[in-house]
Length: 450
Image (tube, one colour):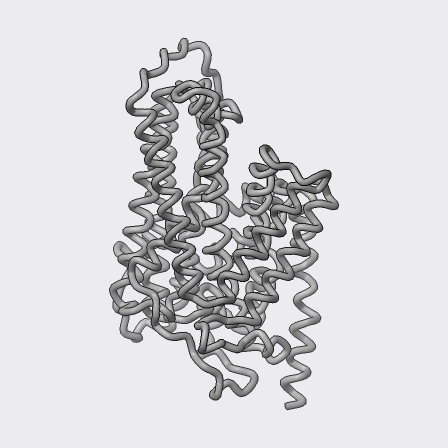
């Protein structure tokens, strides 16, 4: 393992991140990222791949528990090595410059902007349903959402975190309303046993893919670890509280869906609309769209907050991107990193428009890179325990090495699945990763020249 990350240009005069985020702020960021449109899009896909309601609830519970296992691993990393670079910082310390640069490059050009654009297209789809803007309405709304949220975060971390709290509260109230409607409505008649005929193991595996995607995003809290007050206790608290809330919400929403629709109707792609139409009437269907828009905006805003901070860390460590590594003390934000991330996101909106894939193109584009580096981050815990085991740790993952080993196996499974089920978007992301190598060589040449 390499020691402290070697900084390749002078940075002593630059302002550092300030510990301004409370436990509630970080819980809001975690819940805001995780509880997104996936809880509306993916329950139907899960229901299509399970053979019984018991299997469905087992899958959702397993996904939550696996996410908590991963959170325990990240809690040790984040409390031992708190840094605005999050995963980037861990990869740099564990594997050195090349791997960390590849991750930062992928995060800057693939993972974060792809995730932002993914949910922005969902905003576009739902807004176009009621207020179309012409042939490119989806893309226009996506671009507006990205520009608006980036602007809020450029105004300052205070504005960004308040926007996150408001959006998160809106989502939770909307989902709780749906849950209450489901519990107060007559239950659906049970489907005949012969109506469900699916391969048990293969179906369960596919269901877990969608469920883990729905739980995804909690690791983003690592990127604000340098800004959390009392990180030695609040990092693990924020992860456990945030994921506990998410798991409870997901189970309640799925139970409400199942109670009203039954397993077979849950398997239909318009399940949320059917749910509202059957309980409140067709006139309330726009209510679902409103919650979905809030969920998408919340996820996009939280992703913008954390994504810009990894770009900031890239600028701190690599001379060729030094212009990104500047912190604006007045607003408490990495201003240039935010602007650059916004530009890349808008370019990906254009890519999604040209390929006519939109949301699907972004899923293909981001998934393989995300799970590959997630796997490497999980493995870094073993590296640190081996080569940096004497460092004081405010939190140690329980049942080591079994807990991180389970996390690594889950990441390997998701990486294999993402490669097996993605299309042209995955090829584009691999090409983007390869272009990082000549850029890294140029950076070394600049550093050599002094």
